[in-house]
Image 1: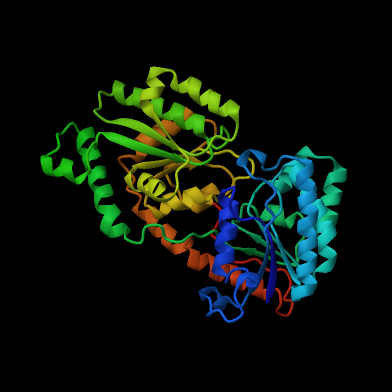
Image 2 (image 1 turned 30 degrees about the horizontal axis):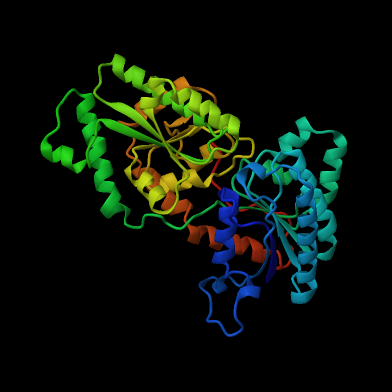
Length: 427
């Protein structure tokens, strides 16, 4: 089949753009950019020819979802490019990622679908963000709901990441729904040889320290040093809704509790990511001006490559107490699971579906005190090895591409009516 991918790839870098890049690369890349006699690509086995319109409307994270006149002009160019590919290369399937619950992004969707949809035989909607259905019902006028339904109704295929956000797809009455989880390349294939021994040693050392016992020189060496410091990683855009400030407060609360218990163990937050607004950057500066907060937090800034790898390898806990409006199945959580990091996160959107049943690291949103209690509990009860196994079973790139290709290819098969792909049960 031939597929027109109308979506942007990094930069700017965030979970959605990264997943589009992985999909494009994994399915063989943009056919227009391949030399006529180039050797076969590994992604060709899926039988999908991709033609990519890179709809990059924003240069910076701060601009995403904001309206600018230049964006409108670029969007019209992208739509024209898509229509040209339709006739030049005979592409009849149009792949599009619907907006989260944001007015300017919704208007973008209207324009794209009104202009492009009449030229394509089949429409595929891939729901990376969650919450649009509820937002349409509670936050916009009935006219906006009607226009959205007119533009996006009865897509030939809606792909959702989890059972939770099936409601977004069902709102627009698609002909088929498939559940396809995100997946990433294994970032630490040598996990058992290089990461797990140190992780286990640090876990065992914390148990001894909490029991009031001392560590032998051998035990201390195996931990890589400083076993009394529990390193908590926050790796996301540095936003209030992503849980940055709740994490900062929770680490301080946890240290107060540990001090009251006369424990030798303390927590240290490593905050990695880019601030999206100047106001949030200033608020973070005000917090860390307090010596107690400053001792508890190290700000790493944006990390990638070796710096990101090192942070995920060396930290002891991963904290992501998000309540971001469009949060669905965040890549950073999948990365933490791949590294076998015990995770503390919120019962928000699809997040609980990503983790084992009755997982002890789930807390309510906007609850730093409960977040602190969960971190203290997890650092002596959860090694993270089960999360690593869950990553291998559900969130690898190979599994993602296989299920995605199956869902896409099925729309050119004889119509079998509306169907829903397998997914884990909602807990």
